[in-house]
Each structure stands twice: as structure tokens, then as C-alpha cells.
Image 1 (cartoon, rainbow, N blue to C red):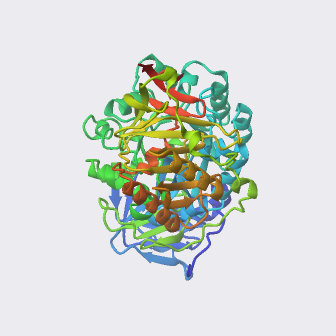
Image 2 (image 1 turned 120 degrees about the vertical axis):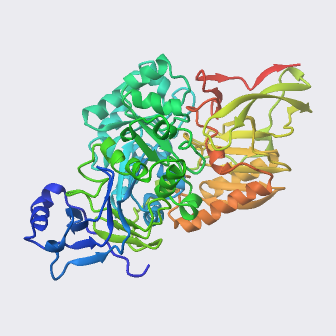
Image 3 (image 1 turned 180 degrees about the vertical axis):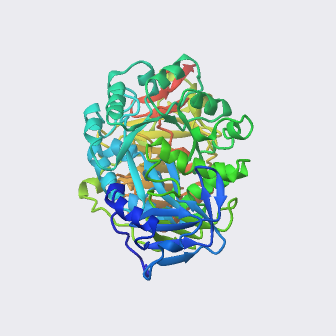
Length: 603
């Protein structure tokens, strides 16, 4: 990278206050002045022909004329009639979903104008426990933009229904609250635990609140009755699992922030933003986020700029949409005086754009320094030295054979009524379906759109394989798609139409240390290597996106018609989102949080 500029460590407001005051008063020159543009004030929802003076990475003066702040060595930037808006904030996201380390994720999103992220590394927590969380936290703090870490709350996400590589305890939460980059508790996915007063869940929430930090929510249920009210009483301060206008309104009425997400596969903004655009709800309690974005989305479509544009396209006033991606987010996490707006004392995170609706990101400034221009990164994103323990996490045991994926029919039946996980395009929930399936030589076979799904245990080398059925992918012909990205326990999920191909795919992932692969007719069509925890790569986002794109193309070549099908694949073991999921312990009915048998009846 040419002319990359390294950003100096950011000093606290207390350390810089005397200098900020002196610059604003005109006694000391600013490091940088931005003039000639229109400043978007997200506190008042105004566009003002103002100028900005920056010192020590923070805004010192924001007003009509900054000429008194300019000295002989002050860098003066001509905004050339463009809009000057705050850097964008992502209120809830998982870096691991991009299949990238924090450094490479930052490098991918900075050119899109994201300067602040609130991240929950519960994916690596399930694989490596507190040690993995610390690695993510430490690399996050090395970056030239703001990456705050939420301590994961639920590993496993549903105790008793799955087995993870490690478990997070209330004591782990207490320890993490003292780390410098921890901003709060990650999404409380075990909502039945909160509703039923589980002591560990309440202890984690209490430890977070005692530390004065924010508790993330995750209420993945359409039930807005007493159970929802009990969850709200338990302390979660936000929720991103809403999918309807009623969901958004219900959350804000309980004093929670409704987080509206647009990820690679989750399209929940349009269905909820009508609470603002049509029902007139107070937009201060709404936040935009991505939740999960894979590397292809980051490279080809954008990040938070994509979400803001989408909100505007859905009828939201551009200034309101910007508030929902800046000051609203900062306020929610107790950082309104630190970031999220162009105002004195805040971190000097700025985007220059020529249009507030289409939002082209023409220059990105973080802590007063230009970090991207015209879509090109102009800074460095330092890497953590990931140890071997983080790169050797796929412990499948012996290689798999086709026999590991056989499903025997019960009681000599000639056909069965099987429970089937039904994938819903562009949504996280699944449907609990049933299908009549044939039996040949004592083994249940797939038919029509029904494929086989298998979860292969990969943390403790138990050799365990759970087999079941799934529909919605549209696969045809002998094939298999396998992934060690398998929220949230991150075992190995394989979906296929042929047992031999499924075994080949499993063995390939064990060989490369995790990732994704697609086999068809006994040959590998594509793979992406994710050697860090079986979840991430420290290669550049463009390289990972290219390989991940090949995975999607290979799935299409196997007959798949779903949008972002690899994301849908990765959620099939997420046993906290209804209706039906798979775990290493069996099929889970998430409506009742119970293990259920694979077959309903036989004849």
C-alpha cells in the first residue's frame, strides 16, 4: 500500500481538553481544518455551512468560521461543496461472519465509511472460550478506527441443547468487564433462560450493569406477551431480532432500542422502519446495524453505508437515517460525548460525500487523519500474532465415510414421516416441516427438495455425527456443501444429496483446518480456507470474498436458488432462533426448546 498513514494512539478527552480549548479559542493552531462543505449536525438534524477544526484526533471547533484556528502548519481540507457527515457506527455485528480477522474486517469497511463497530465475538467464544475473545479484543484495539467488544454472554447459546468447545461463565463475564475495550455484554440469546430466571444469565446481566455497561438483547420469538415482558424486565437494553413493525414498536415501548438490521441475508429494515415513517415513533430509539455480513457483501456492496442507503430507499428521511447510524448508536452505548457526531470533544471521524441519499463515500477521516479516499484504504490495519492454538481447532477424529451419514429407518418401515428443517429465504428463522421419505435397504433416502443435513462434532474429536433433513436449497444431483462456520456452536455442518460426497467434504475441511467446501459428483468445485478457529482468515477481504464467491457459484451449480445460501447454511445449528434446528445432541424444536425425534411416525 502506497502512502499509508499510521494513526497515532488516541488520547482521552481529559488529556487533550486544554489543547482543544486553546484551539477553539484561537490561541493554538489546529492540526487540520475542514472548510467549504455543509456539516450535518445529527444532534439537531440540520445541515449547516460550518467549518471544523481538529486537534489531537478530536474536534476542537465546529462553527461558522474556523479561520482563527488555522496556523502555518495546519492542514486545510477543502470539502468542495460536499456534505460533511459523522463516521458511521454499526450497533451490532459479528466480525467472524465476514470470515475475516478484526484487522482485515476493518480494512474492508473503512473505505465504506464505517469508523465505529460494536462487535460480539461469540463465534470464537464457542470455539476457544475466553482466550479467543481476548485475542479478538486485542486485535480490535490495534486498529485505526473504533472497534468496541461486547463480552459474549451465551456459549453455549442454549445449555442442554448443544455442546460447544468452551463454555462462558458468569465469572468470565466479570473478568472481561475490566478489559479496556469491553463496552458491554453481547446479545443475550438464551432468552428462555432470562424469562425463567436462570441464575447464570441474570448474574451475567448483573455483572454488566454493575460495571455500568450495556446489555445486548436477542429475543428471537414472535410472542410479545408475558414472556417478552419478562425478558425486558431481565435487563437487555436493545434487540436486533425484530422482523415486523409490531416488533420494533414493542421493543421501544419497553425502553429498549430497536436495532434494525440489513446483513448479507437478513432484510429486516424495510419491515420495521414503518414504525418511524408511517407510525411516527421517536426515531431516537432506533439504531441501524448489520449483524452478519460476509466478505463478498463488504467488497461488492458496502457496509453501514449500504444500510443507511437502504433505510433511505425505504422512505426514511436521510438525516434520520444518519442519526440511526451515528449519534443514536453512540448514545445507546454511553458514548455520546465520545463519538457519533461532529461536535467539540468527540473523536474526529468524518465522511465527505457529494449526496446524502445515494451516499457515495469519497473520503473517510478517522481521528483526524484520512484513512480512505475514493474507495481506497490509505492507512494500515495492524495484525495480532495469532498462535497455533487458534489455527488448529478442527478435531473431528477419524476421517468420515459414507456410512457415517446413513440414517436407518425405524422398525423395518418402508417409508417414514420425517421432521425437516425448512429454510426461509432472507430470514434467520426456519420452518418446522415434515416430509414423507422413502426407505431403501433399510436406509431413509432423500427425495425432491429434501436434502440430508449432518452435524459433525469438531471440538473434542468425539466422532459424533447427527443426521437429519433440510429443505429449501434446491440441490440436485450427487453433491455436498460443508462448513465449520456453523452458528453458534461451530461444529461442522454438511448439507448434501449423497453420502459419499458428504464424507469427502468433511474430510477436506479437517485437512485444511476449517472453512467451506462444495463437492459435486465426487470432485471439489470450490473451497475457502478459514484456519483461525475454523471461522476466519487473515488474508485480505478481496481474496476471501473471491473464494467465498466461488462457494456460492458452486452451490448454484448444484442447483441452489437461495439468496446468500451460504449464510443460510451457516445458521442451521443456531438453536435459539425458531423453529427447527440441528445440534450435536439431535433435532431441536426452538419453539419449545426441546429435543425432538427425527421421525414422527412410521408405517
